[in-house]
Image (cartoon, rainbow, N blue to C red; front, side, top):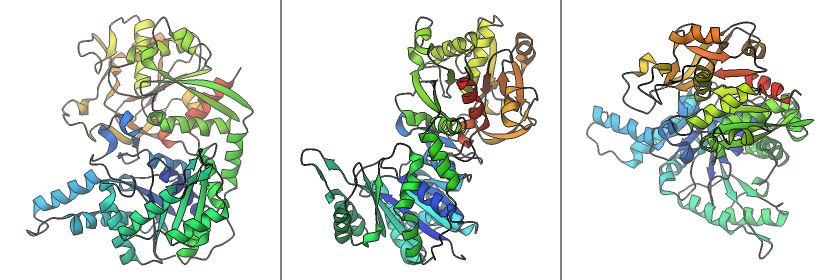
Length: 534
């Protein structure tokens, strides 16, 4: 296939219908047919990226190999496809406007009045086509954030209209995801919201080719025909997306509904029968039919919104399937943990994970969780700040450094076992200034980490400003906490372990970002295995 095909996924009626999952599912099915696929997300907010957003606002901030702080949907893309994303896969309105204004300041527009059309829409179109111009993808799927009809989304919808004209119908496709609500009072599924959503799209000059209808109940053929008639699409182009027990079932449901076949036919591509989806089906079977259950606690301070820890939760699903285990993840608010409550809150857990985060709120609870896991020989995994909490707790309660702390929490501590990274000391701006992206790590043999990875040299993704203070490395080793993973270029401590413990590992990096369906992360696999052992 010589020309890259572009598929646009829009949403209507309500937000959070699952455009990211539908985009990833279609991409997975096309990939299973042998095509090379990537997905990008266009986000309509004015932040340059989600890096400065509170997790309560936007869920977790996902980090790519090249250090981009991106939307959590990129995590879904990578988990489904097993293909790394990059800075080019997430575009925000803030980034678009920043780029256009920078060009205006340089005089690139030769004194012209800068306007939404053509300047903003041209920049959006340029960003959409960047991945296609690389020549390595057969399909670029572009998910447009927000809901059709939002003021913020209008420039993106207009850009889709222009792109469809420029690319032609054989090279572009629009998939529109809407909701078909069920009214209990009348016992009816209502299609009117979908009709209105498509009407708004049409008013903006975009005719959807395929409609995907989210529903809690099976849609009859009559309902599908009605939607097709009123929305001007073919009968076979109305696809049902019914609620499922796991998001990983969605590609299989979309295959049953022939979403990929309809898309290929509309793009003039011959549909072949060979679909290599068996490994995915095997994974879903393991997820739905575990041999045992294990309860693991996730201790964090954003637990009211599970999306704040989305990649961690999904990494447990992947690792659980490998071990034929269902991980019952219990979200525990670190502010509710004290010396008096910790035993009652954590006593039934088979494993404890202390989550990443920033700032001093909830730190004392995280330290209590670390102490409980360490003293009771419960498998423990600390990620980023969670690893730093493990270091602080060990310094205070084993090395007897009562004043041990991170300088993030206390500038005046006499035992700064966690210190600000040297290159961070002159940083004043917040956005995109942390240690971000993929960095190497060298693992010591005869360690839990080496047992998990099976190799010495690894690369993992980072998002932090503070690090283990190497001035204390010998004291920790003598006390029983070993530094088993080191960055070979900087000497930065990446992994700490307590060898005398059943399984106690803290990592400065974020292993959850690299866990995918068909390549579960080794540390999570080892952690779940340790937790599941009687």
